[in-house]
Figure 1 (cartoon, one colour):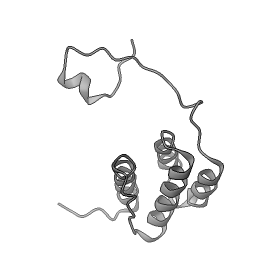
Figure 2 (cartoon, one colour):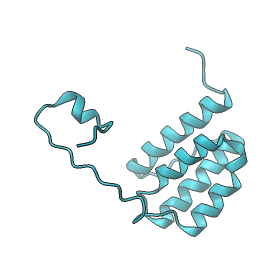
Figure 3 (cartoon, helix red, strand yellow):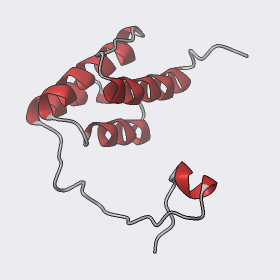
Length: 108
């Protein structure tokens, strides 16, 4: 079995993990894809690919909302939330990646 990056594997010996790749079954909606392409030049190709991957698990309407939020953040550094905890967790991570790449992370 392929080793995954699940935190659960690090903290438990009693869990079996079944790895799947469902990316082909859950694509990016056309509208979300267009919105993401509008911000493609504002981040590196590697980061752009990572951001696209984050949208896969969401419904097309939420993908579009998240893509719009990411495009705004990449352009204006204004972060929006959705009120949906799963989407907001992903957005927070994506905003952090963009902030790191744009060099706007606060020095600790």
